[in-house]
Image (cartoon, rainbow, N blue to C red; front, side, top):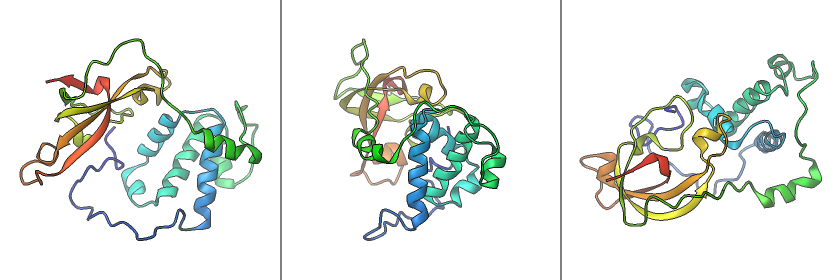
Length: 219
């Protein structure tokens, strides 16, 4: 979808200004926000792709006015309500008022280190062979779905070159909406600066994205 998360170099937002020696967290509550989000995901009610889509759906004014972990918490509240783990009234009141849905699992304190070490691998086998190989020239599709996609807005309808075949992975556009994992081959595609940013762009710059196979067509 096209939303405030996908600015893609649009003018008016100022330069990227990295913070020197930036800490992992700027406040204690951010640590709790991360913990709550990971614990909520462990309940098994939604996928990482659905959680991303929940963040994308935050209204633009709220999204752009929120910090990184504020966005996480706002999306978590939506997911908890959507999947029956907490009603909106409970979230607002800060206390239990109903019996929640039964979780598939609960992340307990002594499990955290092992769960984080394992991560959440999303590579999956597919039966077909890759349609593209390194060196192939490809063009990305031009679409603007209301649903989730990992194809950046700035890289749609652009021509680039396949640099690598990364393997086969869960297709997020389907997985975010309960349509199954439906894995596809993923490719690193490289674009030059003028192709992405147009006339006047630095010709020495390149932009690389990881693109699922259905995003691409052969040139």
